[in-house]
Image (cartoon, rainbow over all chains, first blue to last red; front, side):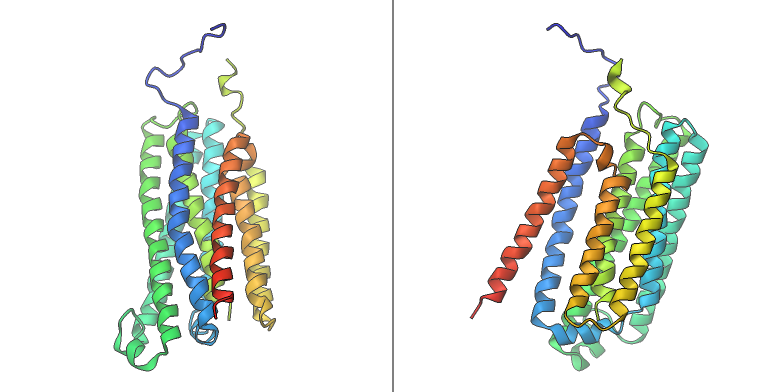
Length: 207
Length: 96
């Protein structure tokens, strides 16, 4: 060997491996949501009128608002990775914290949105759904609750990862030379954003 | 020594411009789906979603600055997903 590799991190830290690991995990997430998207498109194809009708029920405004704030939070956490590399730890912490708060606001909106559905008697297996809705509408709302619910669960997980990122930034575990935890928290959050980019038009926009 | 050289720092400005582009695309997709396009509504909404996801993957998720093999991997996964959708619909469209 003519080239002796310079060991910089004796604890085997490897930024590139961490990144690849995160991407492999993201692929499994795409498999999960991808399957649901295929189920959605097949049922939509089979029940076009019922999906059209049921889609009218959803609140476009809340859906759009959540899209906008989620996009903003994606930008702030992306900026946090830049702040860390520029050595501005405090700004990085602030930017992750902002993303966290926006994630929370997203969940609050979701809470009110679902609350309205519940008050209209629409929830999986409700009397109203079973007695008064067609098969297609039941499928639409079933998919709506499962997919937005699963997405909301990912928002919560993303926020928990952000807490670890903030802790790591604060106690010096995440540094310019060890940025993976923050980078991967960002990648995960962008995945959550990416899924919403498709959920939003499919449920709220296509009437 | 060149270990850290591949570390590309993305300027804040880039992220901000991408956000503005994403917001414009979002409002465009809201606008275009409010007018009655019939069957093309789904296609229009999805085209906007695909452009938006491309921007998120390329810039927010850093693929533009990553090594090419990561881009190839991600592209391959999305291509497989597309193939699965196409095959599923070929099945449903030609069922008798």
